[in-house]
Image (cartoon, rainbow, N blue to C red; front, top):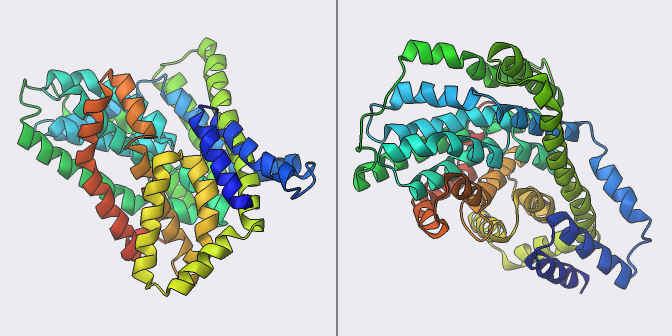
Length: 421
Protein backbone atom coordinates (compact mmCIF):
# COMPACT_ATOMS: atom_id res chain seq x y z
CA UNK A 1 0.00 0.00 0.00
CA UNK A 2 2.80 2.41 0.91
CA UNK A 3 4.68 1.76 -2.34
CA UNK A 4 1.52 2.17 -4.43
CA UNK A 5 0.68 5.45 -2.68
CA UNK A 6 4.28 6.65 -3.06
CA UNK A 7 4.54 6.08 -6.82
CA UNK A 8 1.00 7.27 -7.52
CA UNK A 9 1.67 10.47 -5.61
CA UNK A 10 5.01 11.05 -7.30
CA UNK A 11 3.46 10.52 -10.76
CA UNK A 12 0.70 13.04 -10.05
CA UNK A 13 3.13 15.60 -8.65
CA UNK A 14 5.51 15.27 -11.61
CA UNK A 15 2.67 15.86 -14.06
CA UNK A 16 1.63 19.01 -12.20
CA UNK A 17 4.85 20.65 -13.30
CA UNK A 18 6.53 20.90 -9.90
CA UNK A 19 10.30 20.93 -9.69
CA UNK A 20 11.56 17.34 -9.66
CA UNK A 21 13.12 17.57 -6.20
CA UNK A 22 9.89 19.01 -4.78
CA UNK A 23 7.79 16.22 -6.33
CA UNK A 24 10.15 13.51 -5.08
CA UNK A 25 10.43 15.09 -1.63
CA UNK A 26 6.66 15.38 -1.17
CA UNK A 27 6.13 11.87 -2.52
CA UNK A 28 8.47 10.58 0.20
CA UNK A 29 7.27 12.88 2.98
CA UNK A 30 3.50 12.37 2.77
CA UNK A 31 3.54 8.53 3.06
CA UNK A 32 5.93 8.85 6.00
CA UNK A 33 3.39 11.10 7.72
CA UNK A 34 0.22 9.23 6.69
CA UNK A 35 1.51 5.75 7.53
CA UNK A 36 3.68 6.89 10.44
CA UNK A 37 6.73 5.11 9.02
CA UNK A 38 9.39 7.07 10.88
CA UNK A 39 9.83 10.24 12.94
CA UNK A 40 10.01 13.25 10.64
CA UNK A 41 13.36 14.17 12.19
CA UNK A 42 14.81 11.27 10.21
CA UNK A 43 14.08 12.95 6.89
CA UNK A 44 16.57 15.87 7.10
CA UNK A 45 19.15 13.52 8.60
CA UNK A 46 18.87 11.18 5.62
CA UNK A 47 18.98 14.08 3.19
CA UNK A 48 22.14 15.50 4.75
CA UNK A 49 23.91 12.15 5.02
CA UNK A 50 23.15 11.37 1.35
CA UNK A 51 25.10 14.42 0.13
CA UNK A 52 27.80 14.34 2.82
CA UNK A 53 30.19 12.57 0.47
CA UNK A 54 33.72 13.29 -0.74
CA UNK A 55 32.96 11.52 -4.01
CA UNK A 56 29.82 13.61 -4.60
CA UNK A 57 31.96 16.74 -4.33
CA UNK A 58 33.03 16.00 -7.91
CA UNK A 59 29.58 16.96 -9.25
CA UNK A 60 29.75 20.74 -8.65
CA UNK A 61 33.30 20.83 -10.00
CA UNK A 62 32.28 19.08 -13.22
CA UNK A 63 29.35 21.48 -13.53
CA UNK A 64 31.67 24.45 -12.99
CA UNK A 65 34.05 23.12 -15.64
CA UNK A 66 31.13 22.87 -18.08
CA UNK A 67 30.06 26.45 -17.25
CA UNK A 68 33.57 27.71 -17.98
CA UNK A 69 33.74 25.80 -21.27
CA UNK A 70 30.43 27.35 -22.35
CA UNK A 71 32.16 30.77 -22.28
CA UNK A 72 35.19 29.68 -24.32
CA UNK A 73 36.20 28.85 -27.88
CA UNK A 74 37.04 25.24 -26.95
CA UNK A 75 33.94 23.86 -28.67
CA UNK A 76 34.61 25.81 -31.89
CA UNK A 77 38.22 24.63 -31.95
CA UNK A 78 37.09 21.01 -31.67
CA UNK A 79 34.56 21.54 -34.47
CA UNK A 80 37.30 23.02 -36.67
CA UNK A 81 39.53 20.01 -35.98
CA UNK A 82 36.98 17.34 -36.83
CA UNK A 83 35.73 19.32 -39.79
CA UNK A 84 39.32 19.37 -41.09
CA UNK A 85 39.54 15.59 -40.61
CA UNK A 86 36.11 14.51 -41.88
CA UNK A 87 34.55 17.50 -43.66
CA UNK A 88 35.37 16.26 -47.17
CA UNK A 89 33.69 12.87 -46.61
CA UNK A 90 30.03 12.13 -47.40
CA UNK A 91 28.12 13.30 -44.35
CA UNK A 92 31.38 14.83 -43.13
CA UNK A 93 29.88 17.58 -41.00
CA UNK A 94 27.60 15.05 -39.30
CA UNK A 95 30.64 12.90 -38.47
CA UNK A 96 32.41 16.02 -37.19
CA UNK A 97 29.47 16.78 -34.89
CA UNK A 98 29.54 13.27 -33.40
CA UNK A 99 33.27 13.25 -32.66
CA UNK A 100 33.19 16.81 -31.36
CA UNK A 101 30.70 15.48 -28.80
CA UNK A 102 33.12 12.67 -27.88
CA UNK A 103 35.85 15.10 -26.83
CA UNK A 104 33.44 17.75 -25.53
CA UNK A 105 31.87 15.09 -23.27
CA UNK A 106 35.33 14.30 -21.94
CA UNK A 107 35.48 17.87 -20.67
CA UNK A 108 32.01 18.48 -19.23
CA UNK A 109 30.54 15.14 -18.07
CA UNK A 110 27.05 16.54 -18.77
CA UNK A 111 24.82 15.50 -21.68
CA UNK A 112 22.67 18.63 -21.61
CA UNK A 113 25.68 20.99 -21.46
CA UNK A 114 27.27 19.13 -24.36
CA UNK A 115 24.09 19.13 -26.46
CA UNK A 116 23.55 22.85 -25.91
CA UNK A 117 27.17 23.81 -26.61
CA UNK A 118 27.72 21.75 -29.76
CA UNK A 119 24.28 22.58 -31.18
CA UNK A 120 24.99 26.31 -30.84
CA UNK A 121 28.23 25.92 -32.79
CA UNK A 122 27.17 23.41 -35.48
CA UNK A 123 23.64 24.45 -36.45
CA UNK A 124 24.38 27.25 -38.91
CA UNK A 125 27.37 25.62 -40.69
CA UNK A 126 25.41 22.38 -41.11
CA UNK A 127 22.31 24.24 -42.29
CA UNK A 128 24.38 26.12 -44.90
CA UNK A 129 25.71 22.76 -46.09
CA UNK A 130 22.16 21.45 -46.63
CA UNK A 131 21.34 19.70 -43.34
CA UNK A 132 17.81 20.52 -42.05
CA UNK A 133 17.68 21.97 -38.55
CA UNK A 134 15.55 19.11 -37.11
CA UNK A 135 18.15 16.61 -38.34
CA UNK A 136 21.00 18.68 -36.83
CA UNK A 137 19.22 19.04 -33.49
CA UNK A 138 18.34 15.34 -33.27
CA UNK A 139 21.86 14.23 -34.24
CA UNK A 140 23.59 16.41 -31.66
CA UNK A 141 21.00 15.48 -29.02
CA UNK A 142 21.88 11.81 -29.63
CA UNK A 143 25.64 12.42 -29.72
CA UNK A 144 25.38 14.69 -26.68
CA UNK A 145 24.45 11.69 -24.55
CA UNK A 146 28.02 10.41 -25.07
CA UNK A 147 28.96 12.67 -22.14
CA UNK A 148 27.23 10.13 -19.89
CA UNK A 149 29.55 7.34 -21.09
CA UNK A 150 32.82 9.12 -21.84
CA UNK A 151 34.61 9.98 -18.57
CA UNK A 152 34.34 12.13 -16.57
CA UNK A 153 30.61 11.37 -16.41
CA UNK A 154 28.27 12.77 -13.76
CA UNK A 155 25.78 9.95 -14.47
CA UNK A 156 28.40 7.24 -13.82
CA UNK A 157 29.55 9.07 -10.71
CA UNK A 158 26.03 9.12 -9.26
CA UNK A 159 25.51 5.45 -10.18
CA UNK A 160 28.77 4.55 -8.42
CA UNK A 161 27.57 6.25 -5.24
CA UNK A 162 24.17 4.52 -5.36
CA UNK A 163 25.53 1.05 -6.19
CA UNK A 164 28.73 1.44 -4.10
CA UNK A 165 30.95 0.66 -7.09
CA UNK A 166 34.41 2.07 -7.85
CA UNK A 167 34.01 5.35 -9.76
CA UNK A 168 37.43 4.85 -11.37
CA UNK A 169 36.35 1.45 -12.72
CA UNK A 170 33.13 2.95 -14.06
CA UNK A 171 34.99 5.77 -15.81
CA UNK A 172 37.31 3.29 -17.50
CA UNK A 173 34.41 0.98 -18.35
CA UNK A 174 32.59 3.76 -20.19
CA UNK A 175 35.37 4.44 -22.71
CA UNK A 176 34.93 1.53 -25.14
CA UNK A 177 31.08 1.60 -25.14
CA UNK A 178 31.26 5.36 -25.64
CA UNK A 179 33.52 4.99 -28.68
CA UNK A 180 31.33 2.19 -30.08
CA UNK A 181 28.28 4.39 -29.58
CA UNK A 182 30.00 7.25 -31.43
CA UNK A 183 30.89 4.95 -34.35
CA UNK A 184 27.33 3.63 -34.57
CA UNK A 185 25.95 7.18 -34.61
CA UNK A 186 28.52 8.31 -37.21
CA UNK A 187 27.69 5.37 -39.50
CA UNK A 188 23.97 6.10 -39.14
CA UNK A 189 24.58 9.80 -39.81
CA UNK A 190 26.43 9.03 -43.05
CA UNK A 191 23.68 6.63 -44.13
CA UNK A 192 20.93 9.19 -43.50
CA UNK A 193 22.91 12.01 -45.15
CA UNK A 194 23.52 9.90 -48.25
CA UNK A 195 19.94 8.69 -48.44
CA UNK A 196 18.41 12.15 -47.96
CA UNK A 197 21.03 14.09 -49.89
CA UNK A 198 22.12 16.17 -46.91
CA UNK A 199 25.42 18.03 -46.91
CA UNK A 200 25.64 18.63 -50.67
CA UNK A 201 24.46 22.24 -50.81
CA UNK A 202 27.90 23.84 -50.80
CA UNK A 203 31.56 23.16 -50.23
CA UNK A 204 32.49 23.41 -46.56
CA UNK A 205 35.44 25.65 -45.76
CA UNK A 206 38.00 23.62 -43.85
CA UNK A 207 41.05 24.59 -41.87
CA UNK A 208 44.40 22.89 -42.66
CA UNK A 209 44.69 19.78 -40.48
CA UNK A 210 47.99 20.78 -38.87
CA UNK A 211 46.66 24.19 -37.83
CA UNK A 212 43.40 22.66 -36.55
CA UNK A 213 45.32 20.16 -34.39
CA UNK A 214 47.54 22.91 -33.00
CA UNK A 215 44.58 25.15 -32.14
CA UNK A 216 42.69 22.33 -30.35
CA UNK A 217 45.65 20.62 -28.68
CA UNK A 218 44.91 21.93 -25.18
CA UNK A 219 41.32 20.73 -25.38
CA UNK A 220 42.37 17.32 -26.71
CA UNK A 221 44.89 16.77 -23.92
CA UNK A 222 42.42 17.17 -21.05
CA UNK A 223 40.52 13.85 -21.43
CA UNK A 224 43.82 12.03 -22.00
CA UNK A 225 45.26 13.38 -18.76
CA UNK A 226 42.09 12.58 -16.83
CA UNK A 227 41.96 8.98 -18.05
CA UNK A 228 45.69 8.52 -17.66
CA UNK A 229 45.63 9.97 -14.15
CA UNK A 230 42.78 7.72 -13.04
CA UNK A 231 44.23 4.62 -14.74
CA UNK A 232 47.66 5.18 -13.15
CA UNK A 233 46.15 5.97 -9.76
CA UNK A 234 47.48 9.54 -9.73
CA UNK A 235 44.18 10.99 -8.60
CA UNK A 236 40.66 9.98 -7.60
CA UNK A 237 37.53 10.91 -9.60
CA UNK A 238 36.91 13.83 -7.22
CA UNK A 239 40.47 15.04 -7.66
CA UNK A 240 40.04 14.64 -11.42
CA UNK A 241 37.02 16.97 -11.25
CA UNK A 242 39.07 19.58 -9.42
CA UNK A 243 41.91 19.09 -11.92
CA UNK A 244 39.68 19.51 -14.98
CA UNK A 245 38.09 22.65 -13.52
CA UNK A 246 41.46 24.26 -12.85
CA UNK A 247 42.81 23.07 -16.21
CA UNK A 248 39.86 24.47 -18.17
CA UNK A 249 40.03 27.78 -16.28
CA UNK A 250 43.78 28.21 -16.92
CA UNK A 251 43.39 27.35 -20.62
CA UNK A 252 40.36 29.65 -21.02
CA UNK A 253 41.90 32.55 -19.07
CA UNK A 254 45.58 32.47 -19.94
CA UNK A 255 45.96 30.39 -23.13
CA UNK A 256 42.87 31.16 -25.22
CA UNK A 257 42.09 34.42 -23.34
CA UNK A 258 38.35 33.81 -23.74
CA UNK A 259 37.22 34.96 -20.28
CA UNK A 260 38.03 37.84 -17.95
CA UNK A 261 38.01 38.07 -14.18
CA UNK A 262 34.78 40.09 -14.40
CA UNK A 263 33.00 37.09 -15.94
CA UNK A 264 34.09 34.66 -13.24
CA UNK A 265 31.45 35.53 -10.57
CA UNK A 266 28.59 35.06 -13.07
CA UNK A 267 30.04 31.72 -14.25
CA UNK A 268 30.40 30.49 -10.66
CA UNK A 269 26.85 31.64 -9.84
CA UNK A 270 25.35 29.69 -12.79
CA UNK A 271 27.31 26.58 -11.80
CA UNK A 272 26.24 26.95 -8.16
CA UNK A 273 22.53 27.18 -9.05
CA UNK A 274 22.77 24.04 -11.20
CA UNK A 275 24.76 22.21 -8.52
CA UNK A 276 22.19 23.02 -5.83
CA UNK A 277 19.40 21.67 -8.06
CA UNK A 278 21.30 18.40 -8.59
CA UNK A 279 22.09 18.04 -4.88
CA UNK A 280 18.46 18.62 -3.91
CA UNK A 281 17.37 15.86 -6.29
CA UNK A 282 19.97 13.49 -4.83
CA UNK A 283 18.99 14.38 -1.24
CA UNK A 284 15.23 13.90 -1.73
CA UNK A 285 15.69 10.78 -3.84
CA UNK A 286 17.74 9.26 -1.01
CA UNK A 287 14.63 9.37 1.20
CA UNK A 288 12.60 7.80 -1.58
CA UNK A 289 15.22 5.03 -1.97
CA UNK A 290 15.09 4.40 1.79
CA UNK A 291 11.31 3.96 1.61
CA UNK A 292 11.63 1.59 -1.34
CA UNK A 293 14.18 -0.49 0.56
CA UNK A 294 12.38 -0.55 3.92
CA UNK A 295 9.02 -1.36 2.34
CA UNK A 296 10.55 -4.35 0.58
CA UNK A 297 9.93 -3.38 -3.06
CA UNK A 298 13.34 -4.57 -4.27
CA UNK A 299 12.96 -7.88 -2.41
CA UNK A 300 9.44 -8.29 -3.82
CA UNK A 301 10.67 -7.75 -7.38
CA UNK A 302 13.41 -10.35 -6.87
CA UNK A 303 10.96 -12.85 -5.34
CA UNK A 304 8.54 -12.33 -8.23
CA UNK A 305 11.23 -12.98 -10.85
CA UNK A 306 12.37 -16.13 -9.03
CA UNK A 307 8.77 -17.32 -8.89
CA UNK A 308 8.44 -16.74 -12.64
CA UNK A 309 11.59 -18.86 -13.17
CA UNK A 310 12.76 -16.65 -16.04
CA UNK A 311 16.05 -17.31 -17.77
CA UNK A 312 18.95 -14.89 -17.30
CA UNK A 313 18.42 -13.61 -20.83
CA UNK A 314 14.74 -12.88 -20.22
CA UNK A 315 15.54 -11.08 -16.96
CA UNK A 316 18.01 -8.82 -18.81
CA UNK A 317 15.44 -8.16 -21.55
CA UNK A 318 12.92 -7.32 -18.82
CA UNK A 319 15.38 -4.82 -17.30
CA UNK A 320 15.82 -3.23 -20.73
CA UNK A 321 12.06 -2.76 -20.93
CA UNK A 322 11.98 -1.26 -17.41
CA UNK A 323 14.77 1.19 -18.23
CA UNK A 324 13.18 2.24 -21.53
CA UNK A 325 9.81 2.87 -19.85
CA UNK A 326 11.44 4.65 -16.89
CA UNK A 327 13.38 6.84 -19.32
CA UNK A 328 10.09 8.05 -20.76
CA UNK A 329 9.03 9.68 -17.49
CA UNK A 330 12.17 10.25 -15.39
CA UNK A 331 15.22 12.44 -15.82
CA UNK A 332 18.68 10.84 -15.36
CA UNK A 333 19.29 11.61 -11.66
CA UNK A 334 15.89 10.40 -10.37
CA UNK A 335 16.15 7.37 -12.65
CA UNK A 336 19.49 6.40 -11.14
CA UNK A 337 18.36 7.05 -7.58
CA UNK A 338 14.99 5.30 -7.83
CA UNK A 339 15.31 2.48 -10.38
CA UNK A 340 18.84 1.27 -9.57
CA UNK A 341 18.13 0.34 -5.91
CA UNK A 342 15.11 -1.70 -7.08
CA UNK A 343 17.12 -3.62 -9.68
CA UNK A 344 20.37 -4.17 -7.75
CA UNK A 345 19.19 -7.36 -5.93
CA UNK A 346 18.11 -8.78 -9.30
CA UNK A 347 21.46 -7.89 -10.86
CA UNK A 348 23.37 -9.62 -8.05
CA UNK A 349 21.10 -12.67 -8.26
CA UNK A 350 21.77 -13.24 -11.99
CA UNK A 351 25.50 -12.61 -11.55
CA UNK A 352 25.73 -9.47 -13.71
CA UNK A 353 28.85 -7.43 -12.99
CA UNK A 354 27.92 -4.19 -11.20
CA UNK A 355 30.34 -2.16 -13.33
CA UNK A 356 28.82 -3.64 -16.48
CA UNK A 357 25.35 -2.92 -15.10
CA UNK A 358 26.36 0.72 -14.55
CA UNK A 359 27.15 1.10 -18.26
CA UNK A 360 23.94 -0.80 -19.08
CA UNK A 361 21.84 1.61 -16.99
CA UNK A 362 23.60 4.60 -18.51
CA UNK A 363 22.73 3.47 -22.04
CA UNK A 364 19.11 3.23 -20.88
CA UNK A 365 19.32 6.76 -19.52
CA UNK A 366 20.76 7.99 -22.81
CA UNK A 367 17.93 6.39 -24.74
CA UNK A 368 15.43 8.25 -22.56
CA UNK A 369 17.22 11.54 -23.22
CA UNK A 370 16.48 11.49 -26.96
CA UNK A 371 12.79 10.63 -27.04
CA UNK A 372 9.71 12.28 -25.51
CA UNK A 373 8.01 12.88 -23.20
CA UNK A 374 11.15 13.71 -21.15
CA UNK A 375 13.75 13.72 -23.97
CA UNK A 376 15.87 16.30 -22.19
CA UNK A 377 18.78 16.63 -24.65
CA UNK A 378 16.34 16.49 -27.57
CA UNK A 379 14.39 19.46 -26.20
CA UNK A 380 17.60 21.36 -25.39
CA UNK A 381 19.05 20.85 -28.87
CA UNK A 382 15.75 21.73 -30.58
CA UNK A 383 15.51 24.95 -28.55
CA UNK A 384 19.11 26.00 -29.20
CA UNK A 385 18.85 25.15 -32.92
CA UNK A 386 15.43 26.86 -33.11
CA UNK A 387 14.13 23.71 -34.80
CA UNK A 388 10.43 22.73 -34.75
CA UNK A 389 9.90 20.08 -32.09
CA UNK A 390 7.75 17.56 -33.96
CA UNK A 391 10.08 17.21 -37.00
CA UNK A 392 13.01 17.00 -34.56
CA UNK A 393 11.27 14.15 -32.76
CA UNK A 394 10.70 12.30 -36.03
CA UNK A 395 14.36 12.84 -37.00
CA UNK A 396 15.44 11.33 -33.67
CA UNK A 397 13.94 7.98 -34.70
CA UNK A 398 16.96 7.44 -36.97
CA UNK A 399 19.23 7.11 -33.93
CA UNK A 400 17.16 4.62 -31.91
CA UNK A 401 18.54 1.46 -33.66
CA UNK A 402 22.10 2.51 -32.71
CA UNK A 403 21.11 2.89 -29.06
CA UNK A 404 19.21 -0.41 -28.93
CA UNK A 405 22.10 -2.23 -30.59
CA UNK A 406 24.50 -0.79 -28.00
CA UNK A 407 22.01 -1.75 -25.27
CA UNK A 408 22.17 -5.42 -26.25
CA UNK A 409 25.94 -5.37 -26.84
CA UNK A 410 26.59 -3.97 -23.36
CA UNK A 411 24.12 -6.44 -21.81
CA UNK A 412 25.38 -9.60 -23.48
CA UNK A 413 29.05 -8.84 -24.28
CA UNK A 414 30.72 -8.16 -20.89
CA UNK A 415 34.10 -7.53 -22.50
CA UNK A 416 32.78 -4.37 -24.12
CA UNK A 417 32.46 -2.68 -20.72
CA UNK A 418 35.22 -4.50 -18.85
CA UNK A 419 37.95 -4.42 -21.50
CA UNK A 420 40.05 -1.71 -19.82
CA UNK A 421 39.72 -2.99 -16.23
